[in-house]
Image 1 (cartoon, one colour):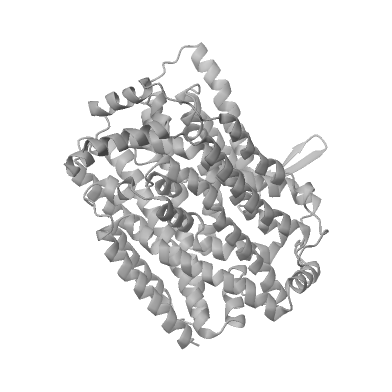
Image 2 (cartoon, one colour):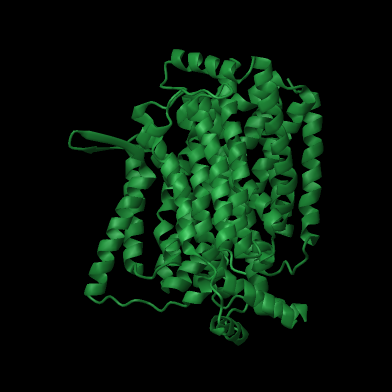
Length: 92
Length: 519
């Protein structure tokens, strides 16, 4: 049986696929997804695509000039933002 | 002189991953005589394996060598790798689950498969295939450079062709286990490799600054050394470098996930959710890359005198670490080259098999033959890369990889815009692609093929920026204008095999789950 299912997977034209997707579409699905959250993903671009914002030495943190630690902070912030967007828009 | 302790540790880890490479054939068992199993591991990888696989695939050994080398030579400008690998993930989050869904639904194995299905145009699909293979080949060759640098640092230097023997051995072994295990081999090896790289970097960023007198001292020494240098290096990015820095980061981020090898990693995951979770988790590697970039500054501060910038990091390790740990780090770098090299050769082989062999040579090819051709092509691709590195000057591979980034970004409109809209005309996309390829190459040619930065003069203003971004802008303008014209004069559009709901990763995932339940 598993072999049969695996074969189905690589034969996309198989009629089962169409009917199953169609039935999912027709189900009155509760749409909890909110696409507005995606706008958060724009923030890393705003924070990083304008180097004039951060190409400076001060304030120094743990010996790191601002230019370096500012960009490291964005790694963490953007990961958190992406995680937030994922959790907020996930459909159950 | 051969460094025996380093060499023994190195050989031990190399043998370990070789064994893993062959064992991988039995992992998450599937019929390796099918291209979806050999070349995409049956689209079964969960969040953790995908994290290791894409991490090992995207942050290559060449990156580990070249990013600190760039910082070693140029200071702050080399740090563009950090914003690049930050903004790439919002892009991945928004686009790749759609590509995964439509590929799963239609059995697409390559980006060109998708373009073929979406636009119905064999010509456009061929352009995508051609660009993908062209951009991937020098990238594979550069992974070998990472290996060469390490072998040089180990002190293994023979006469004449013997000099290349360790490289040839490493690559033949790689070719054999990729042939037998397909994508499972680099995926399993990536688990070991990335653990090693993390240990290497954590040790480096704690021990080396401690030995040099702390981070403040590292930055101070690097600043002084960069100022004293005759070449233009700065600890803090000067205003003249802003536009180049930002466009290099932006253009590289657009290019990153239209490369065939990164798409292979994405398509092998089990669901769109796996990809989205990874968009939030993969930045851990970006943090790591930032630390690796700092190694360049540490090498300056430690007064490393490297024959080429690429030797900066190996020389730094030799100077600062005990021999056994240097051997461990060198093994990590070499294994770090094998993982992406394997995935790249698989991606190139998939492209050739699906979009050239099946499309033009043998349309009636059976599933078994298809997988067989892909395996053979992966061997040929690796031998080609090996010959490239052995017989041609290193500079050729570096220049071609530089151009490769500019070329591959020209496929962005067809692949990524295609995931959201069919408004663009397939012929317009093809002409736009050609315009981008030609102008991008010409821009790099004006620097004598030395720099990817092109300075645009507008009246009294001059704006230096990444040629890939300029070429993409030209590509887009041509594509949009021609779409309007072609539709107006009624050039026929071709049928679209995909439907809107095919792009919804939730629907596609639920459907697979339903099928499983039915079983």
